[in-house]
Length: 363
Image 1: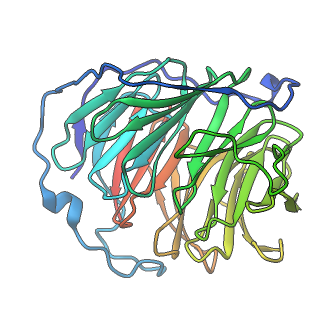
Image 2: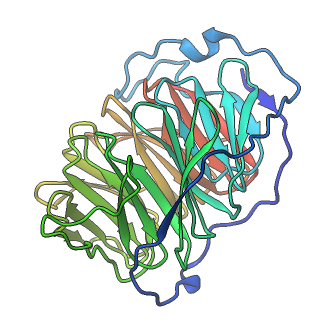
């Protein structure tokens, strides 16, 4: 059963095209600390969602014949939200476009909104311990929020161009961002200071065009970055040196994800394909075709068995990560699907579309 919650729906905006890219230079912005920020709380009209809806067990994951009840849409949240992420404990979904809405997945209520400096949000992520929410926007700001209090605790400002994506390393030490200045920036999550090379220099981690996505291996040793320049770059997070450049895609690479064992890299591209790579060798393991439009987002389940992909063809596709077999196509969105993400326990998948909805799928 699909349950829908209504909140104000902002006008939909399609993803930016390559024509928007601009020549810029790499630099590190300044950091400002904030003691407190007022938090607005919203209470939409509730509709009952039971714990059973959220906590149903999932079996036969990764097999071509999944359980009949798998990947059913159980909730639809309204409100254009290109940035989505589950909290590590699976209790909340953070989503937003101009500000973050924190949804309680069992009650269906918005428990809090986080309103910062403004601008279109591009990415949101939680720290591994679930205490911090990080957001980035096209206005060039990165903001860190205390989840318990809802207060803004740190802000990174000064990016001349927008920030497309950010992630936090599994060890909770590094905040990494990919921006429209064609670079990857690294920050110490606790101090807010720029991370330096072993020699004490600021690292130069650059692409030939916008950086659209970044992902870090489970051991926090390797960072992958995807770019408008059609490449994926692998970086050593200890030395900050380039390890490999993967250039098999024929167009923009929008998204990258790394398997829980750190062995497989998945990438989604404007060439309508998904590639699965051996991280150690840089070789393509599988080339997944089936989408009829650009692939904007890829995500790998926590158990490392399945891959989800989001496309401009209005669908989400579910794949066997190890065989490359298409398992299922999820329909229901009315326009391009911008992003997909799994919950930490792997029982939920969220998809966000420019049709103004976020759908929650039971895995």
